[in-house]
Length: 390
Image 1 (spheres, rainbow, N blue to C red):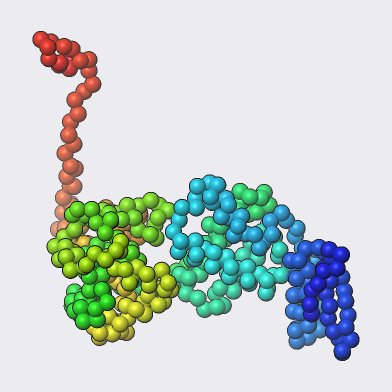
Image 2: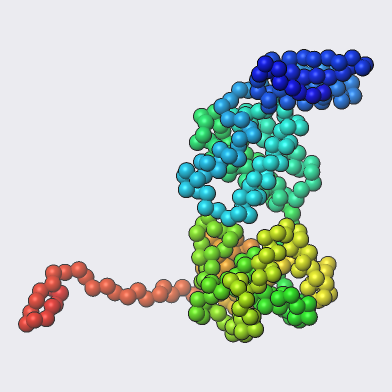
């Protein structure tokens, strides 16, 4: 079955028992004509006559007409994002967002071919796609990300047409994947650092910097010499670029020692990792770090390169650092995220609380930091050439 144009109208040509037939689709729109052929093919593949009729009935219902073709979704979104000043996000975020949209449009072409406009994407259509993602066997976090990216796009598209409504807001699944991250134990931390030295490939200095700064692998892999400002590291984490978060980290001795061993051969501290990070998927990055875990004998331990971020947060909590300090160092915006990265059991604090409760004692009052008193505003009066405040 093939499509061709005749006097600006799309026609379909097909064969039955060796006999060629031609039929007009009565439309000048390629998307509508293509949907016509897709539904006919779908009906032909149905195992029973009744199921084929059901498919055809769905097709011959008049499709919802709209102003914005579904194929133009990404272009409309980008134009609006630029117009409203919301396009200043990382390349990886844009790539992930466009990938989620492509997956949705590919699903539409196969399962909902009559949906040809953005306005026609309603709640039931979105729910059908969410069900499809679940059937694919994707982890709940991956499904959450897909739905969240589509929701972000549709929020912007609501400004493009009065007929567009965001159908994704209530469809984000609950994260049931279990443990989100895992911190290294002190013994395993030493084993991984020793293994990183043996493996080479700049893994040892990267691991040391991640351990003592809590920054993501992507930010350390793409760390530049310009971001080392005297005795501090100042960087904007790529993942949270849209939040305009700047992280300032004092350089302590373990970091200072590895920085001395790194030759300056360009803008990046680790040129090889910076280049490979951009070209590798998340899975391939984890496989690259797997070489270090294998050398440490921890291949099946559940650790990943992101474990360094959890480890840094946990060590800070164990040392008594308050949550605001941990948020400032790791670039977290909310307490809930910072608490998720804290794997310390805080047994000492819990024990003290239980003992106070057993003895009917109240917790010691928290002392407030002394505030510097500001002089009261008043009229400046000149006396003997000097100025005093009345």
